[in-house]
Length: 260
Ligand SMILES: O=C(O)c1ccccc1NCC(=O)[C@H](O)[C@H](O)COP(=O)(O)O
Image 1: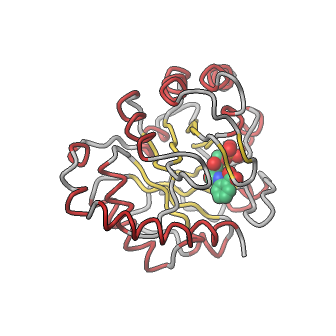
Image 2: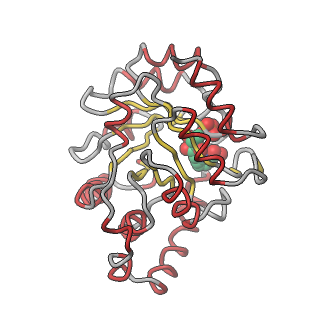
């Protein structure tokens, strides 16, 4: 049993309680539900740096990363640094995030925002739209092929971009769907939390060019990004390397400057 099983079991209970508290028909009335979204995939395709910078207070692999810095400072710092998108972890139990974080990020910055969540129910897709996300994450390891198809279709119908995350070839094979914009290869092994960039390199040739290729997790130097670009990657999701510092925005700025 890996951590995803634990997280998704928790999510099932969480989502069922949320549906009782705020049904989907009420989410559809939230002001941000009508917001015009921005495409993260397009922003990455037209970028020379491709950085998606993540707000991440803690994680199952590292426990506390940074619970001192304030979210508005972090996300504004990321935007000013030249990040092409910001990822906001909204899970509270395992990552210390919240939907309020998403709302605050939406009010603070104007670059596309990815809601980083463990989506196991269409309700969470409506919720993402209602709280101001521009893009959602779907994790192939958490969903059946039919769910991936239905969930990505729903997201696109709500004008949300879809980043579909895979860890191996088997997951990739069920992920090449028409409503998916970006395929993210996660370098973190969720059984032992070890990160290995070779996972991105190995899977790159199997991902058709219609998808924006994103490498996720464990990226801590610009040389890795330069190398991953030669494998066709246009997006790079970085959390801990920025968040573990006192000033994540400034760290991201120095990092991105070296990529230009
Ligand atoms: O980060 C974890 O420990 C983790 C554990 C279990 C499931 C997901 C996890 N992380 C989510 C992510 O996808 C990362 O936060 C993201 O790729 C950034 O990774 P990093 O740059 O290594 O912080």
